[in-house]
Length: 214
Image 1 (spheres, rainbow, N blue to C red):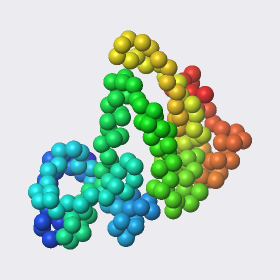
Image 2 (image 1 turned 90 degrees about the vertical axis):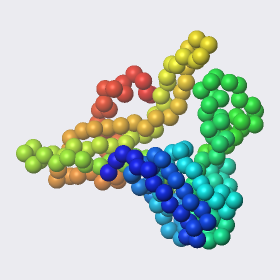
Image 3 (image 1 turned 180 degrees about the horizontal axis):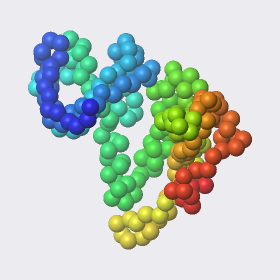
Image 4 (image 1 turned 45 degrees about the vertical axis):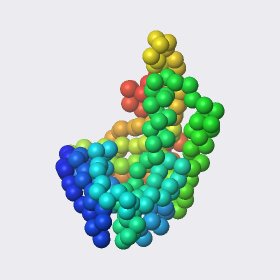
């Protein structure tokens, strides 16, 4: 189900009422250790965007659960209300898009941001963290083959972009490699088989990736 709706709700005791104008119909789930500690299980939530209003805001308490996000709940009944990114990330994004110079402290915040994410996946085992995964998305009974879609190793992408003052700069960053290929249906690939194939005899990558990644 897709699209958006307008919705209203309230906490358990009714001290806080919420109105959201643009709720995404898709329900998301987070299984990270922090969310499970917060609610005793996976966090189930919908994206409400920024057009959200509250009645009874004096009853809202906010906990900064990390350097980039905060969680809100009712002071009286403890009902969970929201999870949202801190304004700092938005502020830094706007500054970079406007080609404004960042301070040394802001650069350090970005530099060390990856380490802050460690708590989110603290309880995830090493196998689940691997990016090299595969799935068969279609089976052709006539040819006895399946269409496989796989994610390969992280590659470096270099992009030229123009900044507001007219200069053209080069930017580099990581990007996931992508594969799409046919494979015998009697030998459907598991993630382990895919990693072995990727290391020993990888299929050709889509042409669209040629020349822009390394």
